[in-house]
Image (cartoon, rainbow, N blue to C red; front, side):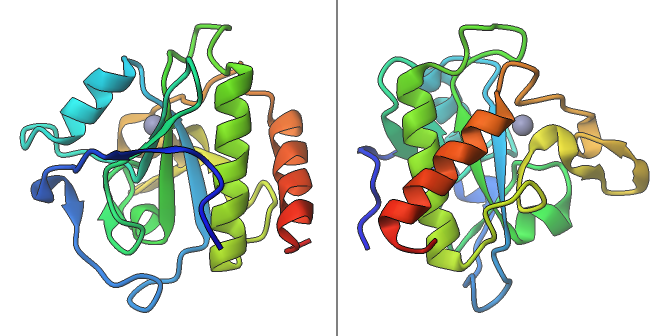
Length: 180
Ligand SMILES: [Zn+2]
């Protein structure tokens, strides 16, 4: 099955910003973690390519038109969740914008993101529910199960992602894909 979203191209993360692996053979892929970039699309891709950043995500979606850039192969482990165990078993999807900006999830970005999530859920057999499709804010701190947002307490994707609508769109795309 082809990826349903328009892939702008390959904007590789620096090899020091992810862990080479052989997923799903080496680690199961059972979560999709949604993020907000807190910066521009171009700035985010360049940050992932910068060996000083130490961070990366598999996909980044542009707000203006929903175009998708890929920076890490799905088989490799991106560093996006601030929790190694969650990184190992997830795909990280970044959305251009800021957590406190209500204009964040444009229709184009929402459509593109939900299509990408449905594609990934179908491909890896990830249940399309809120236990497996989560925000960075829901990732536990690696050393303290009472804290969330990964090691650095991130709050993305923030209050302006309408989760009910997001999950409804993912389910609708899955019906089209045939994965029910
Ligand atoms: Zn994040």
